[in-house]
Image 1 (cartoon, rainbow, N blue to C red):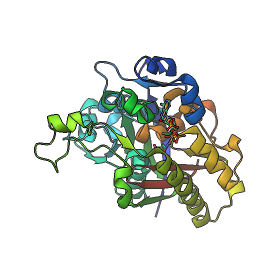
Image 2 (cartoon, rainbow, N blue to C red):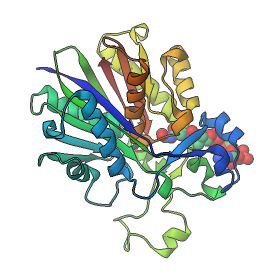
Image 3 (cartoon, helix red, strand yellow):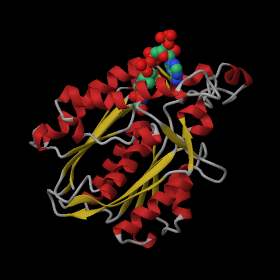
Length: 330
Ligand code: UT7
């Protein structure tokens, strides 16, 4: 079987910057609290005309450019988001149209913070078995239009931001590129981090009562999620290294989903990994769920944090619960 590797990366961040002090105008919070508890200094919010699909398309355009490919070269699209433009259809088909792709397959993945790695696993498999040569993998998220900006929602609202990232996965020699991907879930914790409404399990799907009860805003049991995140991040990183026969010392860079700076620090401490080997850009963008890893990857490439031959681990944990990792020989 041939290999599969990431041959291009791209990102799109909305131009509207929202610093912590702006949030102080809407809710009882402070720049100090947010920075101390999360590491976040500012995040981006979409403006009129920007959506998960439009941002995803822009990020994908850049990834294709960097891969030296044109839209006709794309064989398949996998789009990861928890905030699709519409209930249906998904964002993958919207991007197929926006980029003028051939009539290729377009799949949406709904795995929240782990969505990008789940999507990467699909792309990896399709390329490795030789089904397709170039798969576009996109993670894009719009949180700002669905957050509770009252004090009641402050624990969740201050964390999240909008943005998009994309990669192109193409063929490589066996043993280089994406060495493997590992995905997990534990649905019994679905309600510890979720957004219930609108819901097809309710008739009507949204009601005055649901709105009054704020069931259309995301709910998170923060401390509970935090504890599970530290445990699962550590496990799934170790799983990737062990299965490929590497030790922690072999790792050049860990690019974790940007959930909370304290989570990344706790994971590094847990594993015994020096913090210089852990990439972080949550300070600028907050938590952008499925978009955070591809945005980080693109920045790492641009800043020269990853170079050919480096061993890089991507890892995530989030709603579901879901967690995942990918080990890449860059
Ligand atoms: O993307 C993957 C999934 N998400 C995560 O991984 C996030 C996991 N959880 C977290 O990052 C943290 O739990 C939070 C950042 C959400 C919260 O931090 P915490 O250190 O766990 O704080 P807490 O929820 O225990 O709250 C501590 C205090 C509370 O006040 P009292 O009860 O001690 O008086 C909260 O009401 O901080 C208060 N608080 C705030 N104060 C100012 C909660 N949110 C805020 C806020 N501003 N935004």
